[in-house]
Image (cartoon, rainbow, N blue to C red):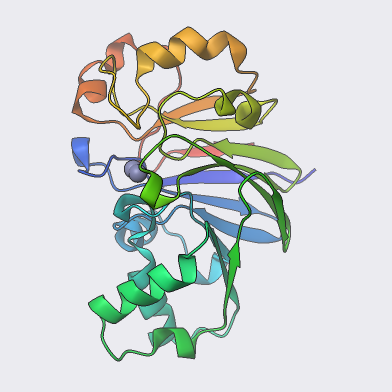
Length: 245
Ligand SMILES: [Zn+2]
Ligand SMILES: [Zn+2]
């Protein structure tokens, strides 16, 4: 089986605590290059870590917060200016096309970016499975700002399963999401503060025995989590880190 390589382009929270970039993971398998979330700082991050935008075939979005999808207009604008011909698929919760169109019109009026690119928008069905070229996406509704359509994702790519909580507080859905996953990427915004819509490390530890992932990676750290990293026994994300599965 060929390897699947994940590069952390950004693993910060919305406020870039610790000078970490917004959420964006690049996953490379033999037939597919995938961005998992595309936060506002994704374009500088991709350049910093040497990802060629032509090696991105698909973007999968967990929910509609700027630190998870705000980088898409900049990425699409540059792709249109360099006259990208290769198709690009964007997989998201419902309303993705409308929201991305609105963002582009606000940020770059009359640029006609969408008309110049070979874009395919796909919407995942919460609780269902979506088949796309060389990958499968299962989407699970999670507990975060409801208006942002928050989802956890279970992605089958290159013979591996990568699960991602998106932004969420603890929910039993995570047990199903992480089941036997080769890698489970879990947001852990706080250390011990119980804040609605986000995970904290003490809660995750309390439920950890119920999670049957093969490997875990904690991400999306706020200031409190960063101050307590020396107490954390689980693997932690860092911008630029690569993981081979
Ligand atoms: Zn969010
Ligand atoms: Zn976030």
